[in-house]
Length: 171
Image 1 (spheres, rainbow, N blue to C red):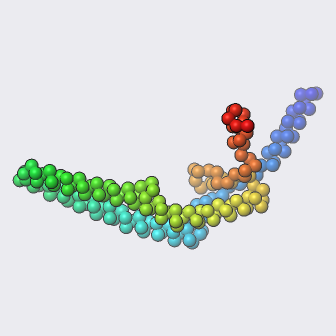
Image 2 (image 1 turned 60 degrees about the horizontal axis):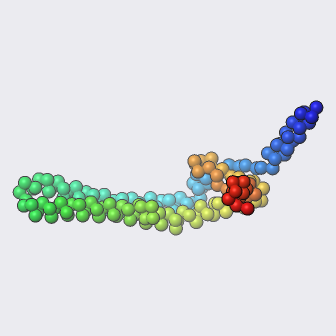
Image 3 (image 1 turned 45 degrees about the vertical axis):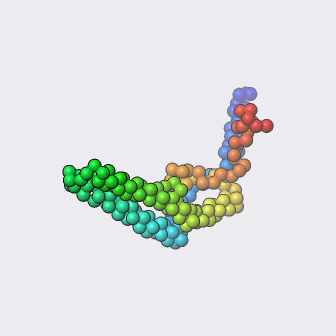
């Protein structure tokens, strides 16, 4: 009898606890596709990216042309001329590589432009999600259109501090 009673009590507490948590999903891809400012910003980024890629490809093409010319003329060049041409080719290749890093690197111009155009829109969407969650008492929101998963989590369901206490790293 006691076992049955404990099983019923545990089941009730589990059921009540499960009902207190509200999880929802959003489709960020769908949301962003329906925001005209996001589409315009994305198109701006794509256009700029294509322009920069064209600049880089032009430099790469120049380096290839220089190399082909060097190959065809190398038999007739002195050692000093060969070294000079090789240095010029390497310099052109390095220029292309540096330009690529400057435009497309982790802190490059494309990243900065993305931050200035796209980040404010994403922040606006996040704030709207947060407001809806607070209003409707949702505890977590998952993005069903991406692998990033969690978009919003209510602070009340974060047990990080409790874990640190349990591990003895915090009081």
